[in-house]
Image (cartoon, rainbow, N blue to C red; front, side, top):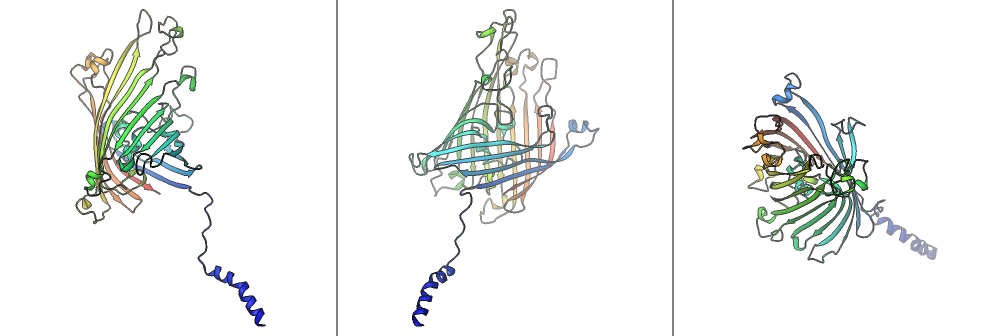
Length: 436
């Protein structure tokens, strides 16, 4: 009996020991899978006379679901990863998209990454190659400092280029927290449009021009913990974007005198942009793209864009004439939690935001627009303002009451040869954003 008891104890001891251990968590079905999202919308109430005139003097108003971004991330083998972000929006231009006049889903980002050369250029450095539907050279970077749910950045709002495009890119993360260098080669048409169509339909054969972008986002003091945060997280970003548009005469025609077949003009027309963006923030976690908490963020742009166009008939009797138009943008914004400004331990859900854009569509209209003598002595421009106050309902939900106004300035009296200004537009908003 004694031997039987000892044998039974030896037999069940491992089971008893195992039962007393903490249960092992099951391995995830998809290791490294990540899902996140952002929803933002608004209630808008227009108060300008031009908007009211369209409704017999009443104020236009509406609830809007502006965007829903759903982002999926997961690894794709050693050093590889994939990101897919959907963009759910309302189709408000049925003339361009007649298939459905409501909320639709499209892709904004869909790309694969491959990262190598880790720590080869200093501690924390790497080089990542990217291909697919990806970030263009500047806008996503600037949105880390500016709350996009209120309004697009000045670069995107004024049509410099799209925030996403199909192409290839390289991202070099500099060592010792010096920043990053990002370069892109893209189609140029943007993610919300099909690739540059030709006269015989869309496709690679009619889209031989590509756009090139490069920025350097430098943080020269990020590795200096003894400095104040305002200086430590200063980011200086010079950037350049080089592209081309097709000529109006790219297909040629009877009697045309271009160098190509049938008189076609095969050279691209200038589509160049460049500028510098500078910003400061209070912590490295301050990032509006993912709901990171900010106590203070301030930034501004100086940017120029040049677009060439051609007119005439491209014939001996009516020669082709090329015109260059140069636009200029100056903008600045600030986000601050005033109760935390001098005491970071005093957490507050209240913040204020302000922004000013000065957009000059053409810096010299009288010389660069055909038959534009009516612009002599004037340089038309637009001023855009945002002023708002925000309240964080919790760590992920924010409501903002804000005023937005765009006003034309320095336009000449409209005639048959110059353009009438877009009327003043004023809207009172209640915006909301949720990150999850």
